[in-house]
Image (cartoon, rainbow, N blue to C red):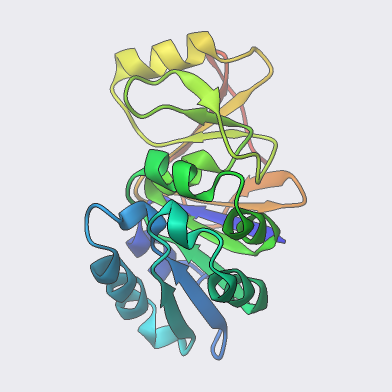
Length: 202
């Protein structure tokens, strides 16, 4: 199990961490339900076409699909699972306490944009920046996306002193392996803090 968090699809496409040729990639479009799940899946396949990987989109868009046996089995067999950007709160509501969520917990994941914020033990609510309960699929950091300065200050003030907050901007790429996080080589646009103090993921 490993995790790649990218601030945007273009950051993944230009990264050395893009899928290998022949990789079996499943694209889970839950978070994109409101902005266009099919379009989001096509964007991923188009951006990564040159890698030679194969892609299958799973339209797991609501709670009714979160225990669909085929979706669960397909995620379990895939070499890599890409989670498309969109509404993290919707993704959380669909995946929480479901067989599909359990499969995602065990999979090698690439999370694009704001959907990554649901993966940790703590999630930052995009509606105001307050910490809330995440899905607990990954540990060690609290993930969020860029926000206004006032909101980020509020977020940092509400987090525990030992919780590292990692802001992944559009060019950012970070990697997790067995709970250890690092910034991918050649990438910036990542800010990590503990309280108001900058920290290094490396």
